[in-house]
Amino acid sequence: MTEQQIHDLVVKQREYFYKGATYDVEARIEALTKLKNYITEHETDIADALSKDLGKSAYESYMCETGLVLSELSYMLRHIRSFAKEKRVRTPLAQFHSRSYKKPAPYGVTLIMSPWNYPFMLTIEPLVDALAAGNTAILKPSAYSAHTSALIERMIASCFAPEYVAVVTGGRAENTCLLKEHFDYIFFTGSQNVGKEVMRRAADHLTPVTLELGGKSPCIVEKSANLKLAAKRIVFGKFLNCGQTCVAPDYIYCDRTIKIDLVHEIKRQMQKQYKAEPLKNEAYGNIINEKHFDRILNLIDHDKVVYGGQSDRASLKIAPTIMDPVTFDDAVMGEEIFGPILPIITYDDLDKAIEKINSMAHPLALYIFTSSKEVAKKVTSRCGFGGGCVNDTIIHLATSNMGFGGFGESGIGAYHGRDGFQTFSHEKSIVDKKTWLDLPMRYQPYRNIYNKMLHFFLK
Image (cartoon, rainbow, N blue to C red; front, top):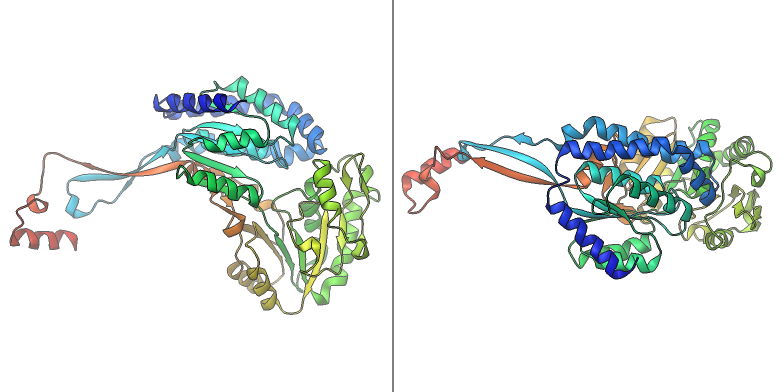
């Protein structure tokens, strides 16, 4: 799509929005229902596209992408009328007789830019929230996940007119053209470097943004943890989608006294979940492309590999890998791994471990495995992070009842459920003043008696 075509598309969506076509809640419900029906009818096509892009099994595709989108759609369809209602608030006596209320209103024309690692879910979930709130939307899926992007383009063209929802495919050139345009809201999921550029370009128009980024999410394993269960859940969260998950445990930070036992249990779980030859496991996916394949391989220090380390360039697969011992100075700790490498770092004092985590960029997620409620409270209270789990990994993002988002370097804003509706809404504060009574005290000329009356009303 050319720069002029993108500009014309934004203009058409703005004209459509200003006609008020998206304001009616019943029209929003109709749009969401149409989207839900299409997804339900094309689950096999979605799974096939995700398999071609990332080697995901049909089960994983539904569990981590299609199913989560359908859950968000169901949740929003149940609650949209409530979310869209005006909320009456108390009116001060000084404004007698008036009605004060907060009115959710859509921003207008929104841009949703999504990544390649969960290309369906991370494109369509924000769209669900944007449409529920009454916006139009332009979607920009990743060029790396080409099959899923093509499917999304077909789906949107089948469900919506382009002046309501449209898809722009392509790479950097199209991204640049889109970011030159004046949007009313931008929702971006991706890397920190690109997120910084999105924020810079949004500032040209003072456009509000939500940035869902990433970071090195720590997984603390304290000495009282149930190591067998911890290992099982860590292996699931780390190697899901070959580690290409923004909230995957990036590294283990464990008490030195339990490291040997923990590593033993993690190895056992890796063998159990991914078999002796994971590169031949059809349910184990692949790295998105050769560029990222090489980047991940360069992070592996084979002198520190204690399990895994194998790779196959033809299939773009890298086996689940443990590196031990690792320090914060190693190359693997210099960037978000975003791949199937699990470094093991130890601590001797939990308080110092917390200090170390807080000295680094704020992660998108944090996980703590412990049997102590006091330890869990200390870590979740004192560490800065977007969201996380106690005695599990990843599952905090799989609910519409809690917002999901970053903190500091890992992002701005949140979405899912009510939080998603609020993200794509501006809440107007309105006072509806009646005309049958007009108190004189606010008008000049001011008099002493009015001063006393004003003090009375404002107490």
